[in-house]
View 1 (tube, one colour):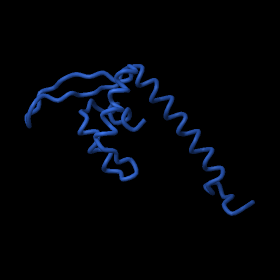
View 2 (tube, one colour):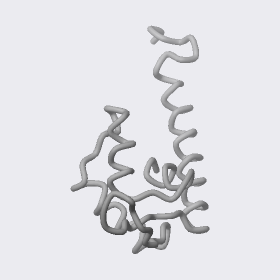
View 3 (spheres, helix red, strand yellow):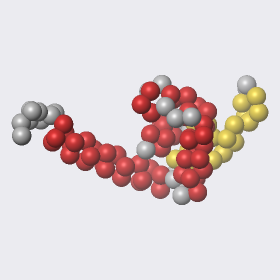
View 4 (cartoon, one colour):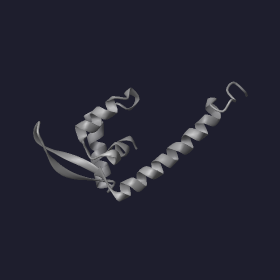
Length: 100
């Protein structure tokens, strides 16, 4: 979900995604995790790739979200919201903490 959300904002290349995820320790994932996920997202038709020249070296492969990816991301966000609401019921966020 986080990878699709990053790509939804703007097309990104793999290392850029790894770097952005690493800014939040709970989401930090190495290249060995992110690149296989990107390949799977591409295989599933949720992202597509294109090449862009880089001033800092060779061309980079960028990922952009597809229409199917946007639909999938919306579904993931809905599921996430439902999960948070359900967890809040038992996590004390609704004033019931400590009650049995």
